[in-house]
Structures are given as structure tokens and as C-alpha cells.
Image (cartoon, rainbow, N blue to C red; front, top):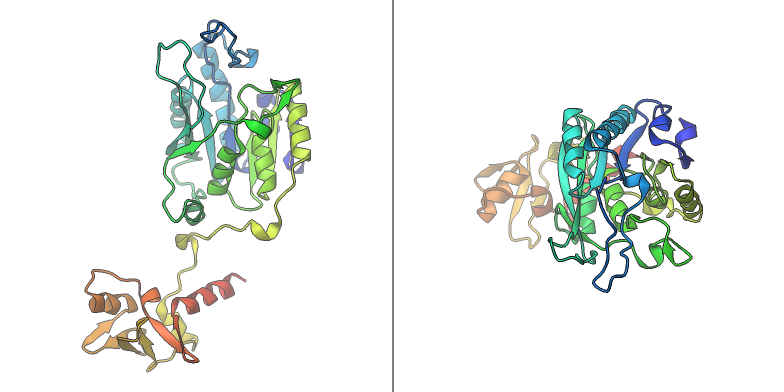
Length: 357
């Protein structure tokens, strides 16, 4: 497996894929040829040529030929995915529906479709259709039972404490990030690092292994390296391969101490209030207060608390006091520590750290 980590290979994707051991990778990101079926050169109103996607690698003899190609690499990608791994595929209206069809037929489990809305798309020069302002990504787990990674809390922090939606407004790759040689784009469909940053942050953890079967100029590997993930990619075109290799070598990883993600609450070990009593951190008879010390309750030996005639869990009693259906008792109740009021959740967090050390 070490031969397939933190390097890229130049060659046929399917041939090299077959050499990779099964269940080797945590995530696959695939940006395959779109089979765009462009029949003639695109031109602007001033008759200048549009530098679009007319490369030979994007051309297939027929839909049947393209379908067989896609099914073959998707089968191999599923084989090399770990049981709890997931896959991202990206495409346009030319191919994304065919990819989704194959994913479902191969028993991948579809989790989301993401709309990458480009805030600077190429205009529609002919004026015969809507401007193509987005691409679609499909995120799927290896199967229905896979316990795939999703860093919900990290994404929420990333998005100013709002849930991350399935429509992403991101620019296309341009400026200094766009690789050019003699003033011309090295690759016609280079993806922006921002797109891969969000994908990798969302669905992998530090030290995970990411595979890209069509790595192009290396964007997935560059972002993986920055974020402390392992990577392996394949590129058939020698020109793209060399550009990617140089780009990856010049990429510096972030310091390890800054790579941890916020742990999802569901993945944290559950620590009941009674554990604080069992361990002697809190004792029966101690008093808990709300943050304004307007209400107080006594801790009972069985882990319940009592406020006047109300007795029950820290959550139930707090909800009764504020007249709500529910309340988070961990943040509502406080204890007195050397004259200072501290939420009892601080004690739980200390236990989280102690248990994970």
C-alpha cells in the first residue's frame, strides 16, 4: 500500500487501479471526462475562438462506450474504498445523470447532490440556451450500511454557525491558482482549490487516504497535502502529470497542530450526569444554579436534581423552570467554583478530554 500513498502515477487509470489493494482508501474524488459532445468550435460574437473543452481525452465514440468506461472505473473505486469510505463524483449536465445511474446500480448509497454554483461562469455566447452556471457533485457512501465520515460541526463553524447547505457558491479556477504555460491554460477544466478544500474538510479526517483516478493538474492532492491527508492520483496525460507533480512538490502542509476538526456530538462518548456523581466530581447535596442565581436545585444521590416540588433530570427540571418542552441542562445549570459560576458542561468537557487521552 505504501507504493500508493503521497505520490501520483502517469498511466491508464483503469490499469493502475487494478493494482491497488482492496479497501485502501477513505475517500475517492473523481473528476472524469465529461463527454461534452461539442460538435464544432465555439466562437464569441467577435468571431474569436472560445478556449473551451475540446480535448481528445473528453471525446468518446458513443454513449455506450462512455457508459462502459464509467462503470469500469466505478467498480474498481468501490473495491479500493474502505467499508466506511465515500466517493465524490463531479460532472455537468452532459454526464452527471449517467454517473448517478451507475452509482446506484453498483449499490453505492447516494447521500447528497451538491450544486456548485459558479459566481463567474463562462457566458453563453450563442444566446440559444441558459448560461451554464453550475456543475453537480454526487456524494455517496460505499453502501447503505457504511458509517461514512461527515464533519458536521466543523462545517457549521466554517459557515458562521449555520448548517452547510447543498448549494455552494464558489468561483471557477482563475488568477494565480490557474496553471498556465506561455499564457495558455495548462488544463481546460482545472478545479478550484476551494472546492476540494470543502469536500476534504467535510468528509475526511487528518491522516485519511484520498484517491483521485483523474487527477489532472493535482488539485485534490495539493489540498490533501495541505490538510494533512494522504493522497494518490493517476493521470494519463504526461503534460498534466508533470504539472501536477511540480505543483504538489511545491505545496507546503499546514502545521499538524492546526488540523484537528471539531468532533461531532454524536461521535463523542456519551457522559451522563450521573457519571459526575459516581466519580466524585459532584456530590449529592450540592447546589446547582442558573446563570443568574435566581433558581437553585439540589443534587440527589441517583443523579436527579430537586427544585421545590420538581424532581427529575437536569434537563427536565430546567425545562420546567423556564416553561419549555426541553432545555439543555448541561448549559443551564452552573456550579460555584471559588466564587465564580461555571456551567456544569465544563466538567463534562474535562471528562471528554480525559477519556480520549
